[in-house]
Length: 363
Image 1: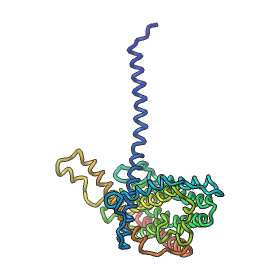
Image 2: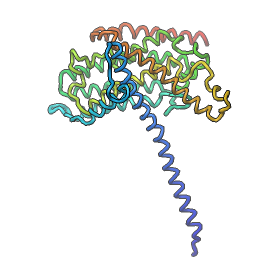
Image 3: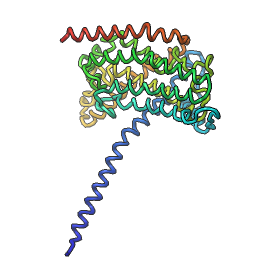
Image 4: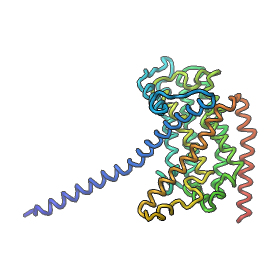
């Protein structure tokens, strides 16, 4: 039997090309994920710098100025310092719970970025249950905080973990009811569909004008979910030393620090998507490069402008939350729970009933 060498070479080249295609496919799966993680990391560094600068301006201080130009590398310096610090473990605590807690918090918040659209068709997973997936995933984070508090074998840490769980349950229900109202208005739970439903009527089509009560309840609930002042009861320094973070040091403490800012950025982006029209601005910006005869760059230009608009709206909400931190005093625990159960829950339920009745009348 004579074997043709050309046929063998053809088969070998075909198998090599198929394996190369599989490798390229795997690479292209990880490229958008890594790009998103890099963008989120840069966004968090900018938030930390902005918070320090705005806080310094409010308190009439100078703020960070030595680490890099205008102190912009201060957050990077703090992260590097935490990375090289000694990682201590409590001798009588539950080491497994103590170690797993911070990871659960960070991973659950990172997963919520899967369904955030940064521009037109610029989303990792356009799911039909996008906003409710975010609500479900974000409810996992308090479990990690409770594990951290319990595993520390410290009364302050355990009290902070219990407070975090109680606060999350109290404010998650009004937040979910507000999200449900938006889904009813848009006839979809996909984040992309919600943004496109707002773009039909321009600036006045934003859900901010159609759901003003829901917008206010959503902002208050988001601040409580992020444990920002005046809702930072789980880590109240005057009462609980540092709450669930009391026994943590080094990189694990840095993970909690990172998780708080990741959660704040995610909440700001969801406020932008649900109420402020997402990447849309009420002007036809994609036609601008075509006026100058740059037709090929129109798509890239439009995508860049879309990302820029989304981030500007998100950072506007971040500015509000940062200034709120230095404006309002911390609430007591009973006041916090009363606000959630006795005020926000009935208001959000009434808002949902109004939205449902208006949608039924319009049919």
